[in-house]
Image (cartoon, rainbow, N blue to C red; front, side, top):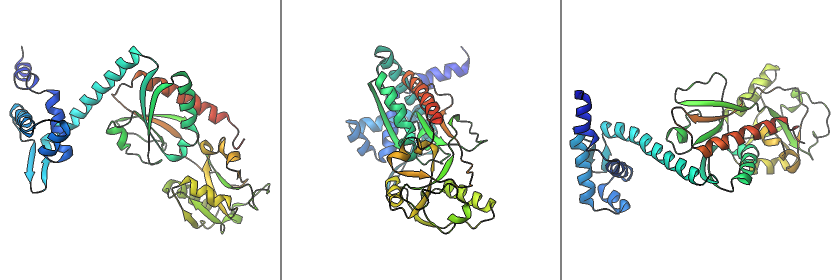
Length: 321
């Protein structure tokens, strides 16, 4: 047996246990052996013994103690980063077994911006849950233009829905474009602009605008108005809340922009009108983002198929109809 393999078996393979990695993770998370012991329902001496065993096996110090508590060393950070992958893969394996034992059960964890929660995602979940009624969906709200995909890289979710600029590359991520999603200028159906058959962008420069506080949205407006030799409109209301923006639009005094994915079936429901303005916003497409070198569970793979179908249906839907 090669020396490196013997060293692994004798010093590492037989001495490092998943339980000990779990204990180390808890100590780092809670910043204290006592607190970790309480949450793990263990004695503090057992926690201390597990950490000491890890340090002896690895021959490095894993924790530093100071007045504020316990902090991980660079060695602990490196070990826990890899350990997170191990635990995630085991968790995925258990999910695979559960799905194989009962194909109608499982869990899908998704990071998704608010605007995709109004049409694309609920459409996909509704269609999927009709076939697999016992699958549970856990959805967390994310920034529509965040490119770090923190929840995904930390393996807190299985997939992320996001706008992805063309040419984006990340060695850790798979990016699958689902939907070209252009933006449109909108107003309430009661607005004085709603009955116009044609509108020049110049007429809207001094109107009241309500927009989400997203650099991408303002960038689209700025680029188009400048391309037409016009002053960039001022924003009267910045609001991340879709409900608030809709309430402001309902007064008939404000203008905004919304994407096709949000307006598909909601324009009529929310009494919004797409205005015939001579502007062409170059919006980044919607993509499903997953981790490379991470096998998706069967239920997540099935849901990805449902997402593709929902995106295709939405793309074919006349906007605002």
